[in-house]
Image (cartoon, rainbow, N blue to C red; front, side, top):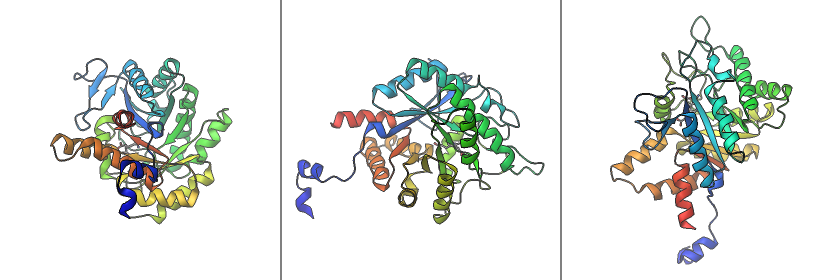
Amino acid sequence: MRRLRSSAGLRGLVRETELRAGQLVLPMFVAERLGPGASDGREPIATMPGVARLSLSAAVEEARAAAELGLAAVMLFGVPAEKDAHGSGAWDDEGVVQLATRAIKQALPGVLVMTDVCLCEYTTHGHCGVLRADDSVDNDATLELLARTAVSHARAGAAVIAPSDMMDGRVGAIREELDGEGFTDVPILAYSAKFASAFYGPFRDAAGSTPAFGDRRGYQMDPANGREAVREALLDVSEGADMLMVKPALAYGDLIAAIKAATQLPVAAYNVSGEYAMVKAAAAAGYLDERATVLEILTSLRRAGADTVITYHAKEAAQWLAEQS
Ligand code: PBG
């Protein structure tokens, strides 16, 4: 086996997996109001070194930097100034994601703007849907609000709609509403296999979306279940999903491969906030070489079967890839 490993040329000749900047998506937090720690429209997020909550104009600049590095797309998360029980900020045509989508589209028509569709950043209780009297999340009442949110994002110019709420039937409900409103060409990237994970901790700091009580295990998946993840993916395909997502990524490579094999659809892996924070912390402590670690992680996710990787390291990775070639 070592004969083909003996030079960089030979290794390149037989390398099975390629990683390109155009396969990476940069998630961004756009805030309606920044805190006192902000400067130049950027408010650093303590648990995610290098990532900031952004003002509208800073978000446009961030998207511009992403595009210049050759990234395919940005994925927007909104941090609204006000929340309510139903999360009505999510489908407000003048909401923070809608405004950011329009601003980025206008300044950078070539950039794909993906939007995360969920209510948790917009609800006072921090759950991903509306609550019943007993505080459980009402699935079907939530579907209508998600569909409304998706249409509002599409109207603002979103290129891809990515529902992350994990309600049953939401892909079908969103597809129907998008089609009914004339957005037949807007694809859905379904967070099909989204697990109730400890790796989302830093994101919840960033987006202010930690549940006020309880947890998300009543709607997000049990990390112990793999066959169920494939069933979730197949259901999303039957409801009209165009791309499927596995989230988190690092501990779920088996499911990236299984979902790819079962569906043959494009699969995205979400290298989530906690995965980013782990690498940043280890690199800052001098325990790991950040560049080598990140490129190995991203390449491994591609090898597992991910066509696309959503990662907070997207800009740095694109820069490192450009330096390599
Ligand atoms: C919203 C949502 C979450 C993430 C993406 N969309 C948080 C959650 O479900 O609690 C996590 C992303 C990350 O950790 O980077 N539902």
